[in-house]
Image (tube, rainbow, N blue to C red; front, side):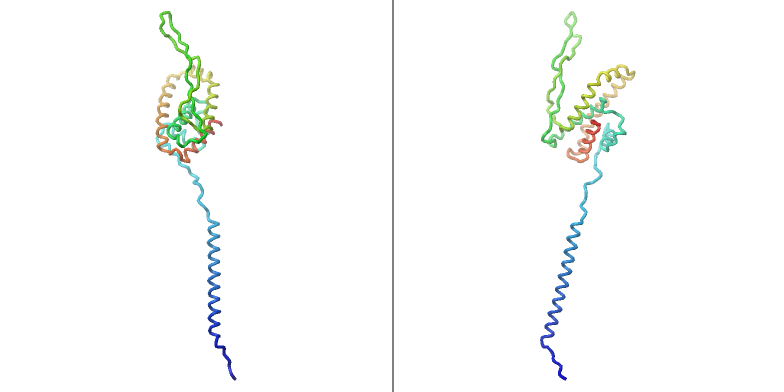
Length: 223
């Protein structure tokens, strides 16, 4: 019996083997590429940090600033109509306008000052001045600017306080501790002035924490 062999058989086997190896490598590469693509699509990008930083260490009104920043309005003892709050709000706007002017929006508005335009002077029979009372006021620009929404909120609070001025005046007159309260207000005013210097050293003008503080300050004013 004769056994016929194909002289090209080894070559065909080599080609077939090489083909399957190439096919296997190609399939593995496609699977790997698909895995990489899917992994990239499903990658969880880092989200914006949930914890914002707002440093008020050592400030006179640190507790108030912190409550405003965190939105814990229920912990704040003062009311928006209080002179103390209006003083803080107004001084903050002026401090930001002076130290962070480059970060104000293009639609910034000028902070206005109310100044006496006409005075009424009373003199005695000898011509000596015994009293001087302002009878007409006018608004003039301060040269400082603020965010329009914050300034509007501050002016709304100022209007509320102005309309309630008589009640506030009577409370001050009838308060037996009026003198002590006046001295306390002087200390608070000095403390606030120092706060407005330190606050922007502790927190950059464009920091997210400072922005959150501003938004909540507005919310408290309009609450």
